[in-house]
Length: 291
Ligand code: HBI
Ligand code: FE
Image 1 (cartoon, rainbow, N blue to C red):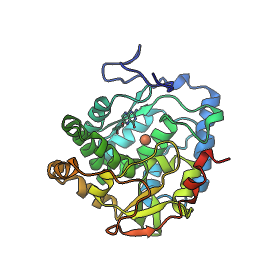
Image 2 (tube, rainbow, N blue to C red):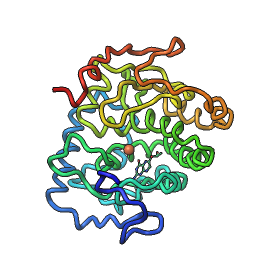
Image 3 (cartoon, helix red, strand yellow):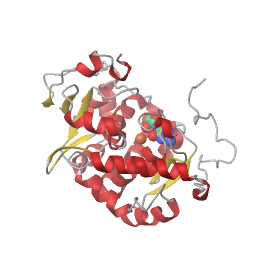
């Protein structure tokens, strides 16, 4: 059983074997296009000085602000020319192995739907705004493009070794909630942050969360939460350095991780490089469920 509206066990009616569906861009309503425009304009006020240069560069290259939800038939040729990636539509969350197969072939699966006007600030499932505004600009960067392909290929292997929880943590703390050192200071590159008005501010400015230097094995052991702002963010030196990490053979890493305990979210280890020792005040007060 699932509370999610867009989660299915097998490709729903109208979906192909690989779970893709047509975007059917003409079927989006005026309200849906307006929702995109509202979210886009809001993020463009918040992100300067907070999101990474590489994100803005990608956004500009794709020209996603032509009014309303982007038409993939116009966006994909630009993206494909830059890094060979394309974006395909899916009905919602797809099974892990389907997700990995798309990534391994440089196809990014995006939700086809957009959130309702009363869900502008929070939704659990990835919609087209999170997937396209959040993820696709980064896919124009050649190093990030290679990292995501490697993740897809690694996912297939991790699944067969029972190491998927560890690899999923890497995705979470980089692709979704990553911070990086940039020319101007600490900046966001994670899609879960750049697509959220409130977390974009929280991740950079709030005194609550820990901000720690990225360490591959450490991250693969760290628990995470999916229902609220993160309690820890990991900071990479550059996208190129991140790509370098995934060129390592994960075999020996997985062997070391086999018996290792998971690290609680708020823990700071003596070996951590500490950018911010957070107060954890936000989480202590009950987070978004606070009275
Ligand atoms: N499906 N559409 C979609 N988007 C995701 O981000 C996604 C998914 N299925 C599985 C998944 N992510 C993750 O559980 C994997 O990274 C492990
Ligand atoms: Fe995402």
